[in-house]
Image (cartoon, rainbow, N blue to C red; front, side, top):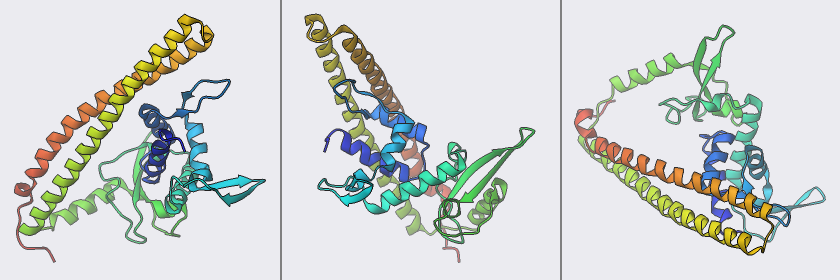
Length: 281
């Protein structure tokens, strides 16, 4: 098991199972994190594409299985992903195939927080463009979309969902203990997130240093005539792209961390805005 690739592939399955990524976006994220195709005798490492990512997510090898003459058998290697996550990944891949990924390219501030009242699945956000260019924004049940629950919830216009959410919040009154608990939970979650960001920053910093060392090594090999110049140029070009991606990811992480600090302060001030009182019936 490749110790460098394994954590990234495991994360890819978990990220895709969340339903928050398109193939292109996830492939871009994985490239920035350093996942590439393995080098072979005839080809150097090369960037990951959306098509190759699709093949990775479909491959039951990471579930701990091997295929021999069309039949799957339990392999001797440890699985990178559990059966439930793998099954979720396959359902979402199929749902994306049927929908052409149109609905998954759009974001809304309520996405991921609203659940279907009929089957409990997450509501997804989508936008459809009419013949005259008009946009129709709506939420739909992920359970019905994937065929997982047999749900019959119809598509819900965005305005209808937002109005219902506003009506719910208008009638909510929060007791003091709940407000204190909520503030503590959110504070802990944000601090945990910042810790994760710092770990990723360290990993990317180490990767930047490793790529730079690798570039020097290949330059020395080319100067010494150990390897053909065309192979050295191809390798240097790939390393340059990887270096740029890693450095760009570091810049974004730093910017995100500053934003999270501001968010953390907003969370700490949350209690004053909730107007604690008696719990709602």
